[in-house]
Amino acid sequence: MELATLFGKVGQTVVYSIAPNGNRAVTVVNVIYPEYTIDVDTSSISLYGGKSYQINATLTPNIGKLRWSSSDKKVATVDRNGLVKAKRMIEGEATITITAPDGKTKDTCVVHVATNKRSFYK
Image 1: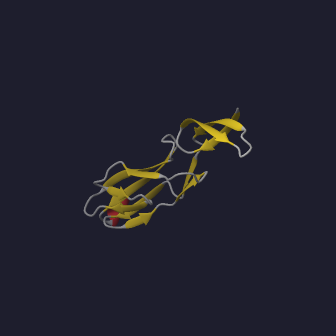
Image 2: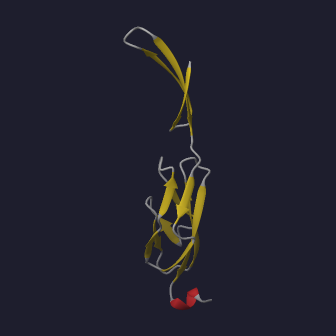
Image 3: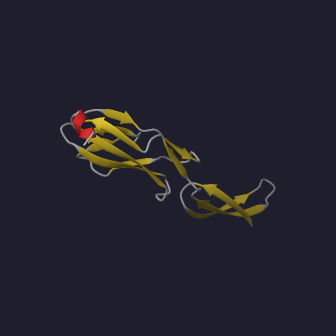
């Protein structure tokens, strides 16, 4: 029996194969998550209401997709590509969380939203 390790959906499967000469083989495939790291270009940003900012994040290894979420969608939202939009007329703070495909590896960026310049200097 051969043993192989692949990346993808977690689990184990058995592959049965027959070669042209009639030889048979059984392969057990263990599918595991890799050790992920996420590198985010900034740990915090300040935006005026109605403005946007593109957060750039790199997933290593580049297997799967990052998931993006906002802790307070009334203050700021984020799309599946990391584009943050500050809500108009709302001041506050939201934490954008970037999650790797394993669901465990995460990084964050804090978004400060203000309606005028004085709000940033309180």
